[in-house]
Image (tube, rainbow, N blue to C red; front, side, top):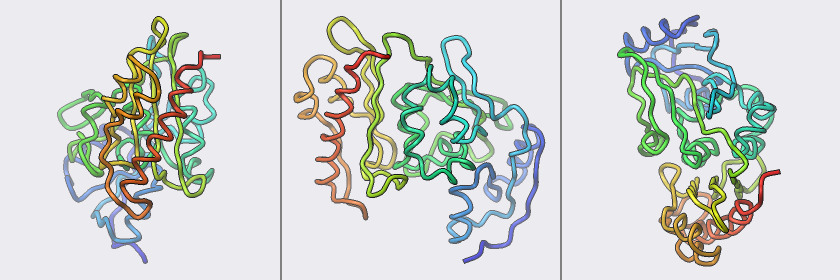
Amino acid sequence: MKPAPFAYAKVRTLKEAVALLAKHKDDARLLAGGQSLIATLNMRLSAPELLIDINGIKGLDGIAKKGKFVEIGALARHAQVEHSDIVARHAPLIALAMPHIGHPAIRNRGTFGGSIAFADPAAELPACLLALGGEIDIAGPKGKRKVKADAFFKGLFETALRPQEMVTAIRVPAADKNTRVGFAELARRHGDYAIVGLAASARAGGKGLVDVRLAFFGVGATPVRAKNAEAALASSNIDTAVAALDLAPHDDVQATARVKKHLAGVLLRRVAEQLMEPRP
């Protein structure tokens, strides 16, 4: 199929992009990597009157460590993030997840901010952001604001973004010697969306773990934190955490809810072992 007719505007500044979003409201869509948008246009699941190409905006593709945080610009390509020394050293959970995102051609064009804004519940990066307790920088007609990851993902492809707003950067705490991370997913083929996946972070504390955050993806309308399992993993052993796993997935085309719940337990065991390993 071919997309419905639309107008096209290429902007050079954030101000221009926000002004066009404010003017056209629900009739406009942002074009960054286009790896999800173009597919929905071709299937006519989306039919905007205007596409706003933001790839010409300078300064939105940087990756930097700023104090105690790693900041990734919304226009940073997946491949750029995947091969970043800063991400590998200071945001290891994201580094673990990047090779699982689609295929090289997709990672060459897809953007970090686009994945967060699209908020596919089976995608890796929203879960990583939630597991790390990150935050999202947003720009709109009323200025700039920040939203914590825990408050950003609202429902199926629904976020805290207002119609005239756009993501400009993502920020996560920089890892230190006590940071522990783990990542695993199960997919029919490498590069496919996961049947079930798990991104996790914690801190070494005493003889165990503290500040455990387990963010599952592919099991709900958003990435989901398993808070009972988090508490159990911090205070007890892996078997107790698996028994406490508090997920309620639904049947979908990939697997039944029962299978997804079982696979979530399998991944929890694998990732919990990763969390207990000291950083290299």
